[in-house]
Amino acid sequence: MSGSNRVLYESKDGIARLTINRPEKLNALDRLTMQEIDRAVAAAGDDASAGVLIVTGMGEKAFVAGADIGELASQTPLEGAAFARRGQEVLNRLERLGKPSIAAINGYALGGGLELAMACTLRVAADTARLGQPEVTLGIIPGYGGTQRLSRLVGAGRALEILLSGEPIDAREAHRIGLVNRVVPAAELTAAAEALARTLLSRGPVALRYALQAVHEGLQMTLAEGLSMEAALFGLTCATEDMREGTRAFVEKRKPLFRGR
Ligand code: COA
Image (cartoon, rainbow, N blue to C red; front, side):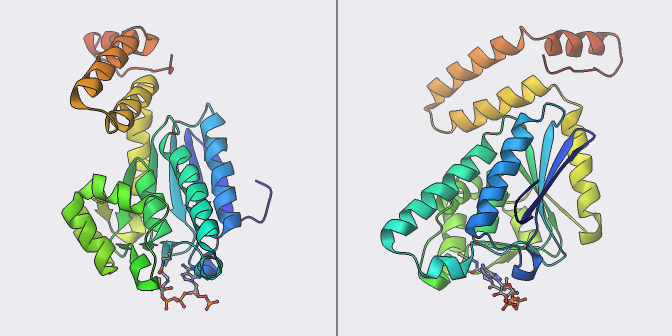
């Protein structure tokens, strides 16, 4: 990908990989990095051969240690609001990619880093990772969705402790409260994220897309509205080749070969 190489992107064997590549600044998200994340996410969305996106950080120390504090420091209130909206839009596009994404959390996931990880569908953390929303230590609050996605993921009580204390938690605690799906030894992180990606790749792509849609849109709805949407999407899956292949493969006692149609 062109640009300053703040983000590396590759796509191979069905898995797209986005790596934040600014290790000398612990992969902090400056404006350029956010623009390159947005481009890489769009590339993953457009890439029909990629069924899953893995998001990770370069180096052993950090996934992403937050938004770039140097850039933040000089903002006026109006600029700050625009900055937050722009970042939220990038992470919304990641969340609504239409295919699953996995954050492989290889170290510090702080501030914008945890917000980036929470916009992914699933999170696998190295046992060395530390996660938090330290914005209050800087006199600000999260602006890339942290107050909203964290409370939806772990509940308001736990979210508020993380948001108000500003103190990071370790990977095991993050797993205990449901903030990450899996914790693995740091040396096994890449393999674990890829194994999870391959499991997802073996499932019906249209079904994954609709399951993601049902959960994300359902969270904005009443239960009755959500159930009604679920029934409609279920009906749509019944019209797919994937559904015919999946059910036929079960009867024939073989693995299904889904084509995403
Ligand atoms: N924005 C800009 N630069 C950052 C950064 C951020 N969020 N996080 C780390 N860096 C930079 C440091 O300034 C330092 O740069 P320098 O070598 O040019 O001085 C480099 O990355 C290495 O970080 P350093 O602080 O020296 O590493 P450490 O091991 O001592 O501490 C952290 C690691 C993560 C505890 C510490 O960097 C930190 O607290 N970062 C900020 C976390 C934060 O508040 N994020 C939310 C922002 S809204």
